[in-house]
Image (tube, rainbow, N blue to C red; front, side):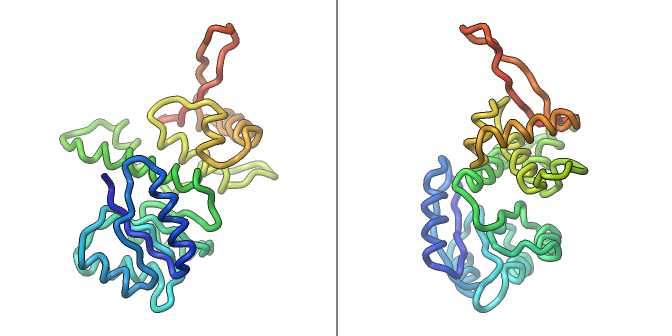
Length: 225
């Protein structure tokens, strides 16, 4: 079980995020905090595996919390969950070791994709031992904050493309467009549009699965190449 600390200055939002986490298998929220000081206090009381950390807190910001955690020797993993969307904050979060950055408002499926990708990464790391390049690529890619494509045509959102990438990277196998849409919290038509684009650019691999009807189902995976 992955123990989670939810940190948000808005008690109502903290409760919503806690309820979201509880719906994802393998995760449980063991505490909430509504300020930087309270978050650091919770960590000193008991260790947790993951912090869902808001950036805008009443006493300090989320990045200050991460810096203090590292100074104190805590290696707790952090996913920023915040309305702060300026590039400087995103970049600083990456440099201070946040594994992922989820912009508010978000859906349950958006958070679930992040948590499932994190769980996949933990399972890989827990195995220990040596690894091959493909597995290293998967570990780094599972929670990478990089863009899903170097450039997108007009009318396409980098955020949406990144969400599709995160869903595919966090999956244990090929997914259909419908499955991707459900996990990413978007319509099937939107998922298909981005999948078609990412396939054309070589970022997504398409395979066909034949069923009883004879019509093949399109299945998608993130390219490891």
